Amino acid sequence: MRYFFTIAYKGTQYHGWQKQPNAIGVQQKIEEVFSTILNQKSEIVGSGRTDSGVHATAQVFHFDYSGELDPLQLVFKANKMLPKDVALKHAKLVKEEAHARFDAESRAYQYHIVTEKNPFAIDQAYFFTQELAIEKMNLAAEKLLNYQDFESFSKVKTDVFTFNCSIFEAIWKQEVDSLVFHIKANRFLRGMVRAIVGTLLDVGQHKISIENFEEIIKAKNRKSAGRAVPAHGLYLTEVQYPKDIYL
Image (cartoon, rainbow, N blue to C red):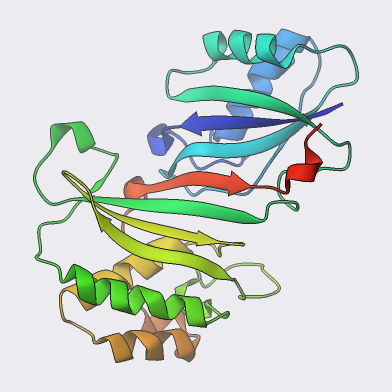
């Protein structure tokens, strides 16, 4: 049987989601705990990677188990054994062919900025004090919805076959004590959100115009875009799937 698990984690102490030979990823921690509880080697498949230091409130992975399994009990037991910065939220039974990565219809991220010193936001939001023209930033962000090729915002060394993505939402929202960028797309390139945010901050500081921002998209050249903002302000917040994959 195949199950989809939703998990939250604070990425500060991890080298991203994916397990690696010489570094600790969140995936490795989960597999170790599952293997201990079930007394067999356990491997999981995530909906996608998150970079070192990036957080998630709703990452998804799938897990196969051939025997009898109470997913609620597995979640309960695993949460007792997982580190305090990793938490399983829930599990759902899915069709045998359902795939956490390839069946995802959309993914959503948020980037959090605090403009005043906040000891409770350390490692969880980007401290940025420059004044920003938020309305102008939103007008620039709207331009993203008109394009498909986002090579200008991708890390240079990447093994993707296409730089095309469909962006469904891109908007800045002022919260009580923070500024949050919301972006949703069918897929994301490595470093894409952080590069978009860095370039939009240039727009908000009047370093570049909205027209310049659109020219950067068209350039398909990472050197033309702005810097990548720090990883600790970024959160994976949602992965959506077709309803018919659930049993």
